[in-house]
Length: 154
Image (cartoon, rainbow, N blue to C red; front, top):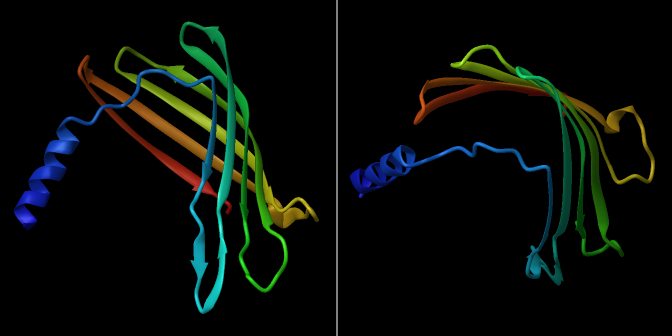
């Protein structure tokens, strides 16, 4: 069984592909079926709404400024003994640069400040900052390597 699983994973990795385009905007909605609490007959649902807008600005042939915003809301009832749902909100900005160095090398650098809160009381604890660097190396037209770094104050 172990060999079959390794073979399946290996074949899946061989056929894996990355997208060669960027979504300008996306919206998604998810709603779970009722979920049970431990030791309580009540149930809850998890509802999520996600929005992302990206505005690329072409500076020149080798540089593209990436700007945008994103928002996410998760609504859930954590405790069956407390009335009402809790809203977990995230609102953030996208700011970055996609730079082409040569036919083989390119990179994307992003700064992602965001606020994650229930929005009832905002404080410094609700602010987070993330940094992302993604490097692309094109070996051949059908073989590309992507690697990067991500850091978040979360």
